[in-house]
Each structure stands twice: as structure tokens, then as C-alpha cells.
Image (cartoon, rainbow, N blue to C red; front, side, top):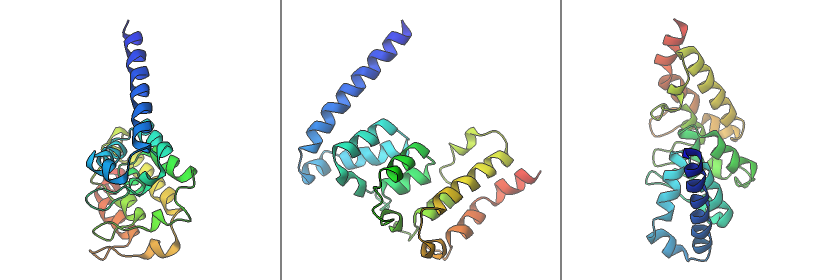
Length: 181
């Protein structure tokens, strides 16, 4: 019975999402902004709701330019919150348009590689047992994001004067010490 209910809810979710996408794709930008669609896409990205983000981008590519209050686009948010599936959607669909989305900066002049070096949103990292494995995963994530950025971005500094690698080292210092134990 529980499986049936779950399938039913999933079917209803997909139907609702389909109709939302249809209405949104026919809406003007001002209607979308006032309808809090941009906010919903940012929240869905932060929470890793892959299907929602994917369907919204299929419905209307203007959502690739959506950003939050800190001017972090959905690509930056996916990296910051460690949502690999959303990151891969954006990257695999060539939505970065010659790395231009990877070149954007937030309000603190952080680029997408800085996002990979941040630790304040570490709930996904904490699901991995042991500091050594967590550190390994964080380093892999940083290197994966590093592959897509232009070399100038690897050395660019944010408002605090940190390059992405320096920010990574600073934010992961405690984890590295615990992993060494």
C-alpha cells in the first residue's frame, strides 16, 4: 500500500511539474519574477531537487541566468551545495556557453571554483563517514570543478584576497587535521 501511495504522489508531482512548465514557458519575464519562480529554482538547486531544475531548464533556458540574493547562479549553487546531478545537467547540456557561466562572480567576487572551496554548506559532506574520506571527496569535487574553469579563474581573488585554492585550504584545515589522525 505504501509503495502505491508513493507512486501516486510521484505521478501527481510529475503532472503538476509538467503543467507548471507549460504555463511558465508561456509567461513573460515579469510574471515569472513576481510569481517567485526564480526563487523556487534557486531553492530547488540548493536542495538538490534534480527533476524540478531539469524540467524548468527544459521549459525555458532563461532560467540558466537565475541568481539568488548573493548573485550566485544555479550553477554556482549546485557546486556550493555539492549537488553533482544538477552540476552535470548544466555542464552536459552545454549550458555554460563557452564557460561564461563559470566566469560569473557573486557579491563577494567568488567564482564557481571558490564555491567548491567553501565548507559552510557541508551537510552532504557529513554523510560520508570519516574525515579522511570526507577530505578525499572534497578534493575530488574541487578538482572536478577546476577542470571546467578558465585558468585565470584559478588564480582570481575574492574580496577577502583568497584564490580558490587558498579558500579551499583555509576552509578544510580542520577536516585535514582530523583526517590525518
